[in-house]
Image 1 (cartoon, helix red, strand yellow):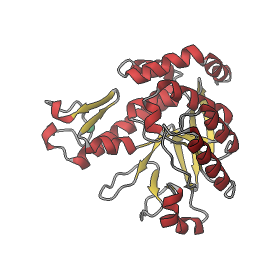
Image 2 (spheres, rainbow, N blue to C red):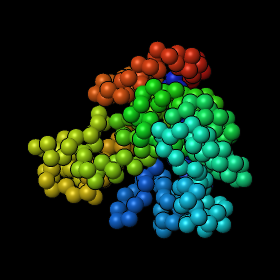
Image 3 (cartoon, rainbow, N blue to C red):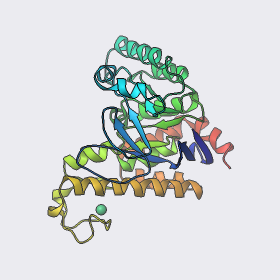
Image 4 (spheres, rainbow, N blue to C red):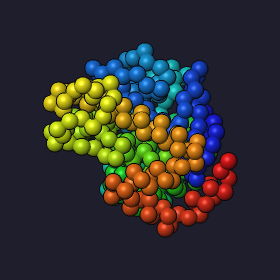
Length: 303
Ligand SMILES: [Zn+2]
């Protein structure tokens, strides 16, 4: 359950009540993977991942994975989870996307009150249909995050429509966003991100900044003074170090976002960060040009 404390345009400063924990939002899930141990406010893991970390949400994955792993999670009903869904790609034929929405919604209806996935690939009307059917879920994952990031028009259309069509009490989770994209997504009303892109980029030796990723090989020194980077040179960083640094940047970004919402300055911050990223800037311009109603509606009710 999310409690909204303050708006800044469509952006929401919230508190996620999760069992005994209260988690400030916007925030991000730390994806738990083997071999790394990083502390954070809230974790996300595959349904077969063994851990004592809390608070945690289990992502049951696709229907196919559910057959392999998720039965144990279903037996433990109190564990918060994102229900399994029909994973399909982004650029798929309409009939495939339509079938995925139908199967995902049909399954979710058997488990009211659980987190669910907004499917629909690149088809705005199918995303809308899925959002309407799942409008009152406590947690909603917007599928195909990595593809949407690369398509500003569909990103803006889908995120704003999902935000409008679902309950303000639904926590919106956008997966696979790089940290420098969190500003724009939070501005559109997204509450939760994850560290999936930080992991992928660490594998490619890409070093996060609040304006985008840099290739580690191109750096003469580390432009960061987090605990990992302090007193180190680029060639000394292995996968685990880069990942921890990337996660530290994601932590910095969500703190900046929350502070900007408190100070009513997220719009300016999103604009400043978008100036270094063509896709963010294109999305921000589309938002201004085509989504004035969406922006004004939330501005009108801001505290
Ligand atoms: Zn660092």
